[in-house]
Image 1: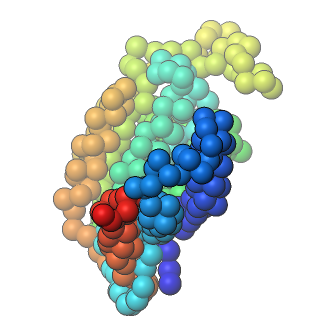
Image 2: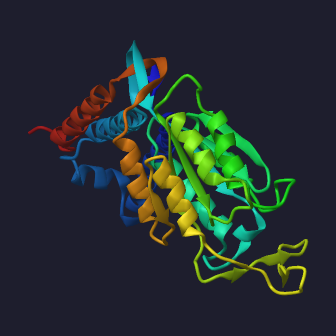
Image 3: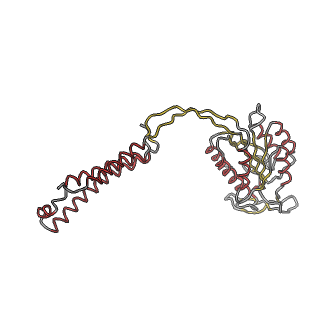
Length: 333
């Protein structure tokens, strides 16, 4: 026998407690009767009550409780082998970890907002493979394409600013690196979601987007930040802001969202650009777009499917409780 929810079997520990309760209740009742009057006389006065029936009712309640607990644990008897197929698309998610992503025009900062968006997107996926790429001056595949969403979220949790050895923002290189993570032979079923503020240091993102389109990759871009500009914090060892980044002339560097760049990248690959919002409506729109795409078979899995039999245990418990109610505790006249 297999149990679908074996944790509920722990409630069987209540059975000895219920037995102890009935025993203690009987002892307490007898002591009260002894205090009230002569025990033999009290038993004669209550001659219509059946002690045997009372004990049988208690036994039936205990047994019924046991079967109710077993039913909660979902007993499963019998099994069959079932083949399942998973269909979806490959989704590579690229997140900007450059210093400009520390700007706090979106609270708590741009990078944390991007991570929150990615986590929410992963929660929406059903059957699609997801991968995570981080980039600044360099690009690195943090998590290859996988159906294990919990593993993807684990890799997401360790992303932090400054983790890439080379500073800067190389969006074009990130697009090229992400393209390498897809299956080369395919010309469809590929999606790249790019989360960045759009600031690029001469890496020709448009050219990279054109190359990605030839590979069948559709790029959706999500702009993180605002266009009015925000200073870039410089953090100390404890993670607190000690100053703001300055240029060679001692002027505070202002980072702005480059929506035009991100719109162009998306347009080239027949994707769409969205600006990050507090309610994350852009994720719903992107997921709807992905859901409409043609799916490919990603995996086959043979698993054992057990047959639920909790109905029988529930039925026995119900019958026992009905019998307990019907027999009563009075002697037959």
